[in-house]
Length: 597
Image 1 (cartoon, rainbow, N blue to C red):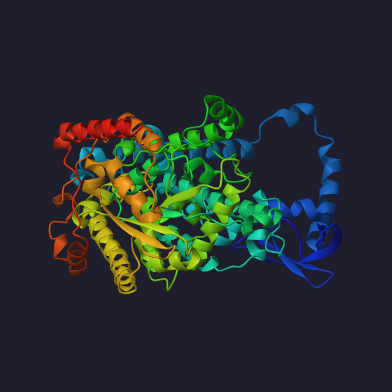
Image 2: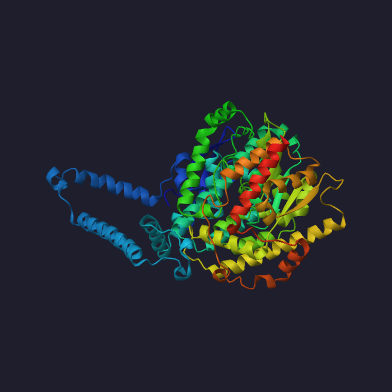
């Protein structure tokens, strides 16, 4: 403890200074309790309290020590400079101990790295494309983590404690905690239960040192971005009154074409897909991106104005992707591409994204047990209103997507009564196999405990729950005659992945007719054709996981998946061996579109 009980402090709150004193000290947490003159109380960490000390109380023992030191100083002044310059036996001993400890630390790290003590626990069973990326630098970082864990210091060095994370986020926002002056505490705290559950799951997860560094950075970023958005919302109340025009929700099993379709739809100048960088850095409000048919001058002006922010987010993304070489062949990531809504759902602590990135299956299971997800959908809506505010090209239709929406179809209808749902379908076995391989790749960044069989079983259980929830709602909607070409503003259309891959633009034409009672503009069809030629399915390479690797050979014995296939006739993906046939179809569509012009 640096400061004695009774030490006087002074701190300003809302421009007024309040005096207080230290009343207790928690050695385990290294936190002081402060009692102020107005009866309020606060806790401060050792690293911050020094800025507020007014008068330090000196204990009787300290005063006696000071007197002894004063007497000793007189004697010390008689020593010659020669004697003072000589190293003492004690100082030499301390130096030897320090050097010895440093050498021991280096040797310990070297032993861990050389012996490769922390490879994947199941590395021998992993195919080459899923082997965790472990160059020497990452091995050294993770070795340090192993040693810190052994001596019980890992939580102090890289804390995932919820109170510490909120305090740090409030500090970044320039606000105070735990007094009620931080926006993260003043608002509705519906998300706090999820936040504490998340941090608890991360603390229990078998993360490497690099994994803890990434997790701490991401959670802090989530909290800080939430705080910045809340402050922005307060400054733009008129934005909250702006309607969301016919939002398009692309929902479906993972790897069922939701990303491909949402990016294709975003080509339409009347649509807007929220890009990854907008979700990553939403404050200050990003300039509205020009539509696909904007003039070159408009596009370049947009790029110049925002290139620094985009470049910063792209650098962060590239650093992350460098930790998992080959991830683009599974899910291409670029900051200027439309991306999944699970990014902004992170800021409401109700998102599948963290469960994909970290081995916290229990947390995802807990989220799936929610009675409803209206809170996170209202949050999404407010963020979209923030992003579209003062859009010079608007109002445009938002095109948003994530497989997680399968769990909240009825909630979407409640929060967005004018929504248009595109439900994509794929053979559940192929879908779960594909997403299991992606998750294995991403989690290899943050953990050495990669078990493909366990991941396959977990993903099967998760998506059984998601499909079951979606089936229940779709059956109810069918009874209420809610679907394509209904009289209601709320509409639904089903799309199969194989049809989307074999004839993408023709599929979009069907979607437009069903959801909007309109034809796809010929010039928009041509733009979509151009995008398809520039972005073939194999642009970033391919990966071919097998059912046996993930223990999914008997997945279709599931009653839920069998019913899903019966109801929707889910088809698999188009074979890559039919690329020539597919290209022929694309060329034919282009000719048709050109003829319509």
